[in-house]
Image (cartoon, rainbow, N blue to C red):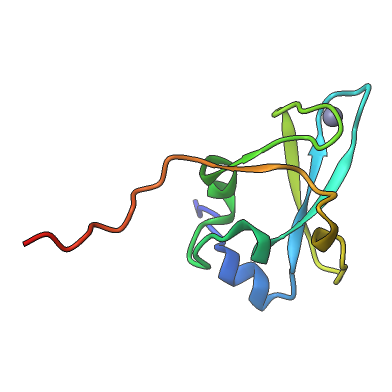
Length: 99
Ligand SMILES: [Zn+2]
């Protein structure tokens, strides 16, 4: 039994530039492309962990009930602000040198 744990770097190596966040609300189904670049996550972050590291919301209705789908084609959508809002989850901050 194998566990798929592709990282962002793995996906980028395969030509994926980001992913689509698709709203699971059947009345909405808004789909938004997000580039890995715009997440600000380390490339070693597992793809499956993105939803835990970043709060992914539907840009149209604000629902957090969304699904993600890796997107291979290049696109230029994420520069105009018209993408799902990304909130920072609690992340361990680098320990400051205090001696
Ligand atoms: Zn929605």
